[in-house]
Length: 329
Image (cartoon, rainbow, N blue to C red):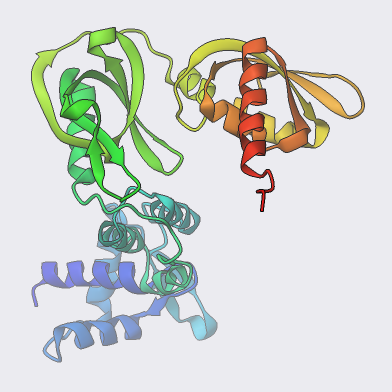
């Protein structure tokens, strides 16, 4: 084994075998080298110490601590991701409905490879693929890649769009007509990726679920991106439903204040009504998504204005009520 090969092998061992809670002595390092390379690997303590120093001086931090009887123990602690960061990223992959299971498994393994084998074993105890809804759209990774490039390069895209029917058959909308869109941004929301862009025929901002896009083509036509406030747009959309923007006034019971702040942010206009209720005023997209969100709070939310939204809620409640009228025998 050459000096260079030994140096790289020691780096691999430290990355794989050590972390904050697991460290190796020189004797243990030599044992790992001989186990992985073979008995012909004859490296003395001095050579290994020089390798450790070289790694530390060249961007691969090696930590040394002195244990009982003055024995030095070595470890590599600094990683691209902290352990809690890997856990958060793994959980994000697990809950992303648009990622097929086979792709999710590969992504999780790539994330786990960023830490030691000891921590991988601990993290794997919390990785459960079963129980999460997944849609088997195996080419979505390519759509995401192409759309991201189109956003960066400001190139128009063409695609067909559709959804599933009650027979679980994917049906194209508008008889398979191609949509012409100027892509503005890709966003992750409600467990799915969405393309936000200008629908060219109507010059209107719309959004499309990427897993429902088919036959995507990135054209050579460039466009000039207009001013667009993504945070404001997402803050007004409920469950990614489109609608008309209006100023609404809604009363909520006090225990829902954190729910409202989670949805609208800390800058939202709130004021106390009485000891039981508070009032929200906000400019939002009035849509079926908003109505469904409000009805989810039952008698703890009441729309005050506009009258059009009051009527939408009243109409929805009426339709729901009719579904539960006792049938005549």
